[in-house]
Structures are given as C-alpha cells and as structure tokens.
Image (cartoon, helix red, strand yellow):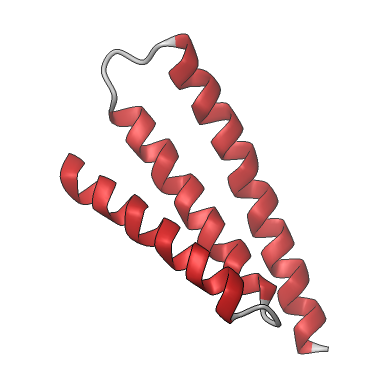
Length: 82
C-alpha cells in the first residue's frame, strides 16, 4: 500500500505539472489536481509511525491547502460555467 501511495503522489504531481501548462484556460483542473495531491500527502503522513511534530505540522498545512484548493477549484469552475 505504501509503494502504491507514493507512486500515486508522483503521478498526480506530474499530472499537475503538465496540466498547469496544457490547461491554462481551465485552472480548476489544476486546483483539483493539487487538492488530490494534498489529500494523498495527508494520507501518507498518517501512515507514518510514529508521527513526529513535523508530521503533525505537515498534516495541518496540507489539510489547509486541500481545503483552499477545493474552494479555489469550485470558484474557478463557477466562473468558467458562467
């Protein structure tokens, strides 16, 4: 499971990098991609044992970034839909 999760994180990071250039006029795709990457990073950090102070900081920061990117993605999606 750990290897699969790391491969997913790398794949999503590559997707976000490519999507930021290819889908420049559709920023919500990039926002949702970054949100998925943040969620995967939180899951990966929870799987660490024991979780250190730095791990808890990563969980908090990535969780805030996840929520922020979701909100930005939905705002950008609404803007494009109008």
